[in-house]
Every structure is written in structure tokens, then in C-alpha cells.
Amino acid sequence: MDFLASMYIDNEMNLDEKRRFVERVRADNEFCALTLSLLEQEKLLREPLIPAEPVLEKNWHPPLRRVVSRLLKPIALVAAGFAAAMLLFSTHPAGPEALKGSKRFVLFEPEADRVELAGSFTGWQRLAMRRIGDSGYWELNLAIPWGEHRFVYILDGHRRMADPTLLASEKDDFGGENSILRMEERI
Image (cartoon, rainbow, N blue to C red; front, side, top):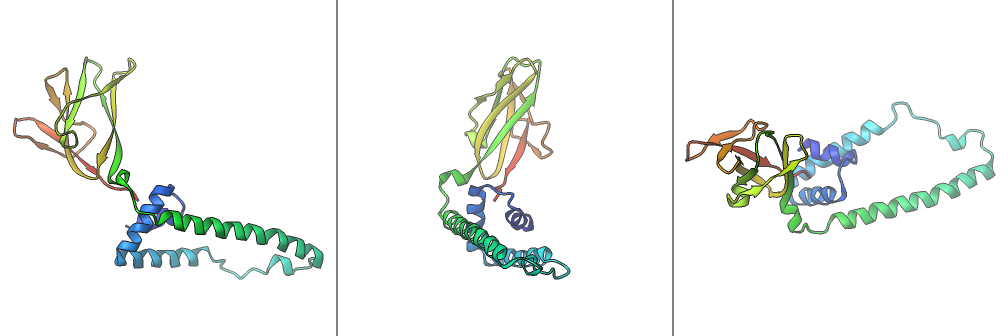
């Protein structure tokens, strides 16, 4: 969970991910305490090691100091307004789209004439994969619910094949092998 707070602190999340992060922090007291602790550590890391002298105090002409101050105040106000808007936006409840993640299935089978995918997330209904030019690759993009799922590729209507890029698999009830896919929510 540390990586989620780190991604938030380092601004490596999009707005939907930030919204889900804030909801997660609000719902889980232990996670909230951990996140606040990490924020304090980040604050300490960003502080200068040696106190620097303020630039404006060193031999600046007083009118120039006023001009710089007048320029910085509006920028600070805009930044504060933006931060407040982000906080309000990030506290809205997640909709149904938050229940699924996107997954791109890719298989290299240049000899196949047709490739389909079936899995627990399709109700074991076969979905046709799209051939990518003459490259021998087949692809399918799907929205998949969070959690653990089983699936298999079906080549030319009958030959079943587990995903060679996934290490997790299990024997099925028909003597074949299913791949195990874990869809975890990225906050």
C-alpha cells in the first residue's frame, strides 16, 4: 500500500485514480494513518538541509520586492483554488466504471485462422480476437471486473490453450489448462 501513497505524493495518478485513492484513505483508518505518516516523511525530505536566506531580503530594492510580491500572490491564490477544486472533485463517489479494469489480451499464433477467448469474465462465452495485420498477433481489449478470473484461448474453434505469458494456471475439469488472471484495482 505504500506505493499508492507514493504515487499520490509524486503526482503519478490520473484524476480518477486520485479520487479512488482519497475514498480509500477516508474508508480505512489504518491506511489513512500510514498515508499521513508517508506525507510527513515526504515533507521532511523536501525541506532544505541548510536554512537558506530569503532571496527577497538580500539587497533588493524595496519597489522591486513589492513587484515580486504582487506577482506571487495571485499565483499562490490560483494554486490554492486549484487544490480546493481537486479535493472537492476527488471526494465524489465512484460510479460503476470503478468496478472494472481494462485488459488487453495478446497472443502470437501466426498459423491460426481464428482465435477466440473464453473465461469466467465472459460467462465462458467465446469472444473473437482481432488479427493484427500479417504479424501473427491476435488481440482483444476488454473491461474486466476486479478479482481473480480463469480464461483460455481457443484456436481454430477447437484447440484450447492457456496464456503463455501468465505463470498462474490450473487444470480444468476437461483435461485442459486455464490461465489465472488477477485484476487488481490501481488506485
